[in-house]
Image 1 (cartoon, rainbow, N blue to C red):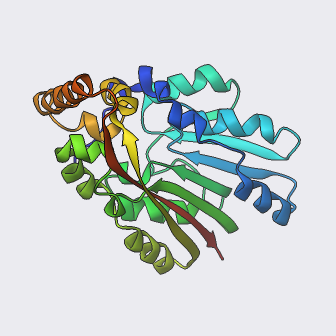
Image 2: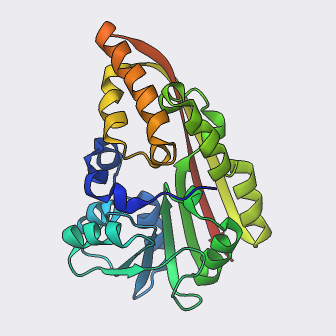
Image 3: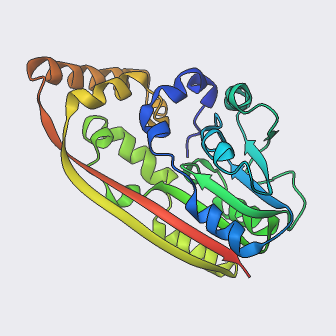
Length: 253
């Protein structure tokens, strides 16, 4: 499995407006805090990237007892996070060997990151280890096995080959967490629609989608030029597009 070099995309990672637009108040976190009724509440954004989750959530929870921590394996991404997050604790480290004591975090959020881990079994062991009793792990990611006709795969077919190697099927994730004794709830949201290709061309050109960095420059340029040519010939061109999202919570008993 290839690894994404996030130092190559850190500077323009936040240019993708979908990453900012989709973030809303974490109602799962709010409900969990209300149930726990603890004096202090430890929250970890695992693979926090440029800090988009924290930047959205911290102002919305300013009256709560939350202590926020972010961890990421990319120093370049953490530097971007520091620019927007100020005093929040940000830690450089990998999910497979986290520098935290056991039973530390009441809530661990993991957005669009699990597929990057080289040793996913070890990462799940670590997540389980650092969760408190009744702690909650929340995962949000793409369910790529349910979306082979996504626009990225339509124009960059090699991207699907790479992603199948990186992503576990959602059933595999579910069973792996259950095996560790966690109480798991999982659902996949699926949608299919016609999309206008010109709307997605800027995202292809920005090349901030991690899988596009894993294909060779020659292959990337070949299919990008095809996409550009089709848009030039028909600015209103549409194609079928699938998108599937995995939403998961796992509670440690």
